[in-house]
Length: 139
Length: 42
Image 1 (cartoon, chains in turn blue, green):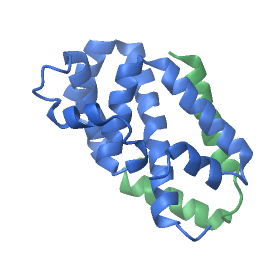
Image 2 (image 1 turned 135 degrees about the vertical axis):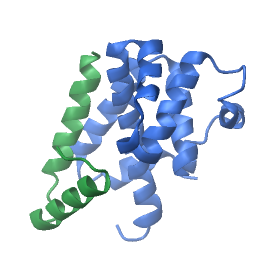
Image 3 (image 1 turned 90 degrees about the vertical axis):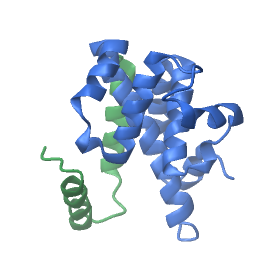
Image 4 (image 1 turned 180 degrees about the horizontal axis):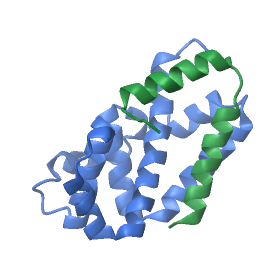
């Protein structure tokens, strides 16, 4: 399995500005929330999208499908993971109660940051999937 | 709000739009089709 970073580096080699800006956005996203939450979101998005390149933490991957009931996850992490799942599956149908749950756990400002973090993670993984699976051999 | 993240995200969006390997009409068709699919009216 090729890593997300190497796929992006290879594919965007002819567009260095976009590659640099995506890397900067990813670094900023990592700095915006605590590492464990970032990792949970990154891995849950990878599981939902089928982005094998991100599957680098076997223990968390094993635990993640049980997030709604597992004591391994805090109420804050559960609220965020529910939001993540709806965001990935159909963001336009995001119900208010999922937004309110994250807002209650993180606060108004961090809800905005969390959404931006999720957006960066999703874009990066979707780009990797598109380049690895759809455009394989075409570039 | 985490300003570096917001700025970095906007910077990436801007540099993606500046890529010119796909001609403008196709780019616009894709943009509109995605907006329609995701019910994005902005």
